[in-house]
Length: 357
Ligand SMILES: NC(=O)c1ccc[n+]([C@@H]2O[C@H](COP(=O)([O-])OP(=O)(O)OC[C@H]3O[C@@H](n4cnc5c(N)ncnc54)[C@H](O)[C@@H]3O)[C@@H](O)[C@H]2O)c1
Image 1 (cartoon, rainbow, N blue to C red):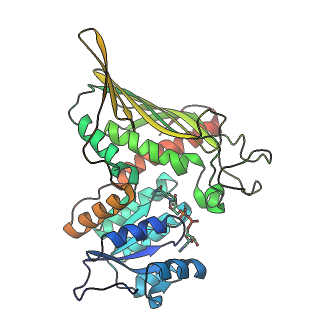
Image 2: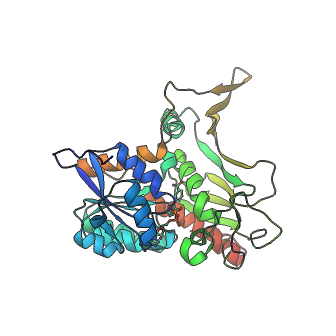
Image 3: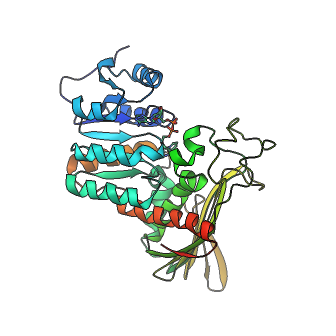
């Protein structure tokens, strides 16, 4: 049945670029915000991707575009939602900002710090919003822990462990495993999630140095299987595991581990451990660990409402900020800090030493 369009115009008209895997989540999210928001144009270089998403989400075929330049020129849109492989994020976002559109861009904002700097410069010239789609910040567990941390119950947080580890789950599409398209492996794909969230909890301290390793030990082997199917071992040009240690200007430190393939017990887990002078906290369990009157205390935080979809909330927050002229809910300056650290890991592995970031 055709979508019932109200007579009044939607308040935020969005053009979505990249009709692949993650676009389904975004288009579903935008549909939930209808009629205040509407995806009125879509773009993909593949006609079959355009047809699949355009048909499913009832976007008129005359608003299907094969290049983002054409979409920016012809479509009546206020904002652009960038869902293409990482290597194309900067170009499309910068062109959209220069065309006077607000931009929400999938993570990582871009795979190198310099691209993010250029995006920030374009944002400054345009006066529009540029937001990274770090949906994990918008999970209820993240929002509640962030609010709890604001009470300073942990004291001075001087150490953090951030882990996002998969035993045998490598995304098999070429856009993930080819360095020129993705910019990197698990570091860039899922390390970016857990590091962004850990830094968000820590209040984004300024990183000074990074040491780490980013090897590909299993990813080229034909005797190693993946839970998400086969991948092209010849094209595999990124790491399959990364580990690093970051020192911050305020004296705090963080250890990061992320993998697609790693010989560990668990199939997959994400964990952030924050250690402060008064107590520690763990995410996503939301437990607090301290000491009172000589007794060790372990407290579990719980909340009356925890059914929140991070992806959809991030779109809502973006739309509200764009419509009200408020700052970006995920500032690109913070994504730049994340990428300086991840880029430092690669440089450290290449040089075999600690590097300044
Ligand atoms: N937040 C999350 O949890 C999450 C999950 C998955 C993917 N992502 C991110 O979303 C982005 C896309 O990932 P995906 O899994 O949807 O990839 P995908 O390969 O499934 O889809 C990408 C689509 O972009 C199209 N495309 C490529 N270059 C283009 C261009 N220049 N112009 C227009 N279209 C172009 C491709 O044809 C394809 O249809 C990546 O940056 C990825 O990191 C985020």
